[in-house]
Image 1: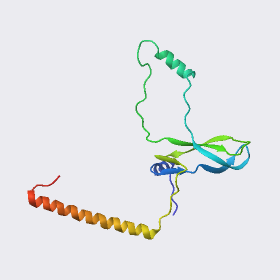
Image 2 (image 1 turned 90 degrees about the vertical axis):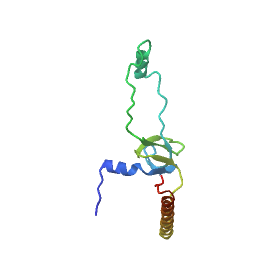
Image 3 (image 1 turned 60 degrees about the vertical axis):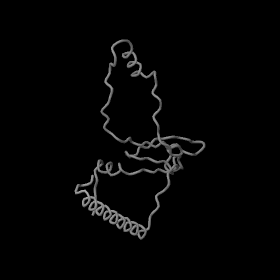
Image 4 (image 1 turned 135 degrees about the vertical axis):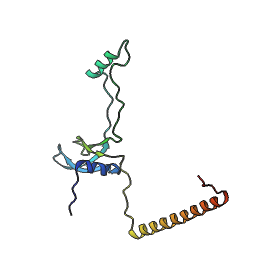
Length: 157
């Protein structure tokens, strides 16, 4: 059976996961024209220039009397940002950099611990233990409810 996903399905399935990316990645370098190890960092937006045309126009319009002249955006829709990786070739003579965009995710981690596989026997045992514990707690809660009911003839909160 073959499953097909639309782009939005993949994005939604990916949103809840924590993404863990290694600090080094072996990938193609355009300058070296071969696969090289690359140092991976997360791209950060630079400081806005005070001398960009839009900023100069906005500051000129804002100056003087009259209050706020342009609308301030307040209806933010997204809860996540698209992650952009900055790949830098580790070859001393090259050092070329490129960006690589990955999907949206709630939690992004760079060079975190790898997930270890848990053996199924341990997992089943822990699940049974949790179920047994929850049933015991449930029974205790029911008993407390009945005791309160008998004593006060009122339902506890």
